[in-house]
Amino acid sequence: MKLLAFDTSTETMSVAVSRPGAGPVLSCEAAGGPQASAGLIPAIQRLLAQAGLQLPELDAIAFGRGPGSFTGLRTACAVAQGLGFGAGVPVLALDTLLAMAEDAHARCGLLQFVTVLDARMGEVYAAAYRREDSGWRTVSEPALLRPQDVRVPAGWAVAGNGIGLLEAATVGEAVRVAAQPTAAALLRLAPAALAAAPVHPAEQALPLYLRDKVAQTTEERAVERARKDNLGGGSGAGKR
Image 1: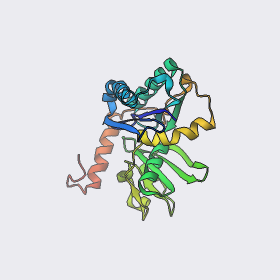
Image 2: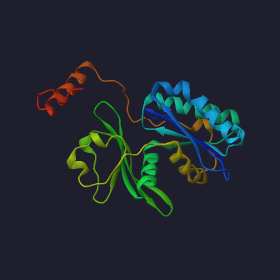
Image 3: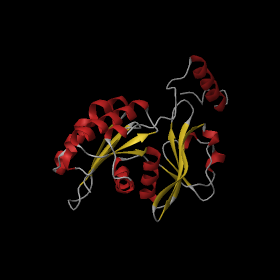
């Protein structure tokens, strides 16, 4: 399939294009966050040119819908909707935590993951997925949690950039995988998503927000600083 995929939900912007029978996937990474709003479209244009593809030739456009950075999700959604609507191409809004599970599977071959993404403000986004013969099954839907509330069942691996925020007792002996919601992972997920529902209007591809607020109050920041100081034993080791 001829597919374009991109994710800007984290501090890394990831873009990839697949071309059937024309060699490996073309991909690139760059700074995400606020910089993605300026860099995403030029990166897409470069990869499509390298692949010798025009937007209307694509079978679908896939993007990481979240959870993740509010600014990044809005950027990815707006670009996906604009390109999809203008070119008449289906748009696939895929979970970033599922993309992390797919990336982790490609790295280590394991089949069941709790994926954890740093949500800032002392919280994480987490979900659980199991890979079966029919594809990925969602065991636990994406949720916004305190790190101490994340559970990793025995025999499961934990993946993502939020692992360091979890308590040692939570992770236990679980295998740890430093996975990301890469565009290449989204490309691998896209065919199944497209087959499950062939009609994907661009205007219905929306971001997934799990938090209503994006900044802490002064009091909340003071409490968080005090918590980190206490974790550091009062010696300043917990300060950043």
